[in-house]
Image (cartoon, rainbow, N blue to C red; front, side, top):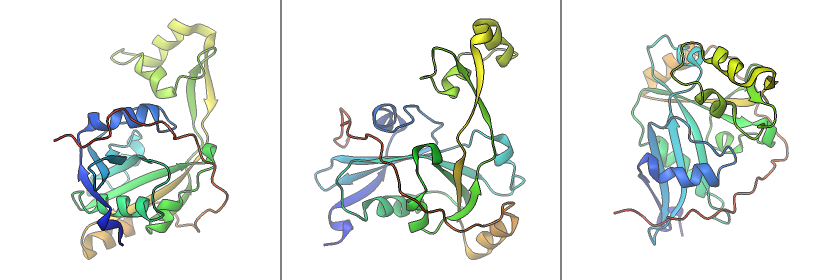
Length: 227
């Protein structure tokens, strides 16, 4: 039987992803969310979540000179043990629910030994590794994500200086692991052609290697569909 006989995809509220993202996804952090989707089995049990939001990088947001909107597929997590094609079905179906024209970017984290095989399977464009970048961390609090550290200074006039005043020499910078960068274009044939022509990165062969699986055995507390 086809995947359609067993699963369906629907838009969900951002808050319905929080338990999944904070406890099941390896990043343990809520990203900016504009669109959220869930994949449900035919008993209406939520089996995975996917979110799209505004990319953090302003440089990346300006690549298409405001002619085309750019969004990031920033989280994708499903339960273990599902059928082989569920992930690609979830992704391809979710893309059809997004407005277009639209430029999508997503990353596969090399520090997790991820290569982006789901993007390769659904024909995304690979453009190599992200640029080298350093993140702020605090000695003794290395478990806190850079974004969490920066959130502490939200609303301050000089956020970095505020952090330096607060943590002193314990505020350090660590080079961020580079990520595999993928793009996908939504729109009609003319729009996709123009977006493609404006792509500022060289297209490269898909990366290969053995993926490292992280522990995603956590079972979210509310997996039933909210009516």
